Image (cartoon, rainbow, N blue to C red):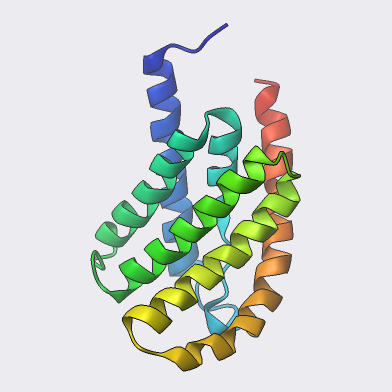
Length: 166
């Protein structure tokens, strides 16, 4: 049975709220646990669930809303944090679209997304803030991105399995 447009809108809106909440939670409470700005990427779980359940357009809405509203709530809209986050989410969204179209495993998809998110953030700092030496941080970010991508991939896989039962 096809989902009504209203029901679809409500689900995507709830996914946006979850992504924003996870993003804020992670930035406020977990943000400084790991060195070099490495984060778990909890909101990526919601992005993967969204693309699997609803498609590319909806995943893009969730990811962009997460960056805009998350930075707006923190009072950082259009500041450096906003642009760095947007660079990461754009590159990770492109990676997620490609891995989704290639029908890659969920874990592989989120590892690639995690790596691309880090790369996107570093590229923004290099290009817009004229900091070419930031590339030196990439090996450390990769060391964090790969295991974090595996963790979020496993969580996403289990969450999708449970959601399909509903």
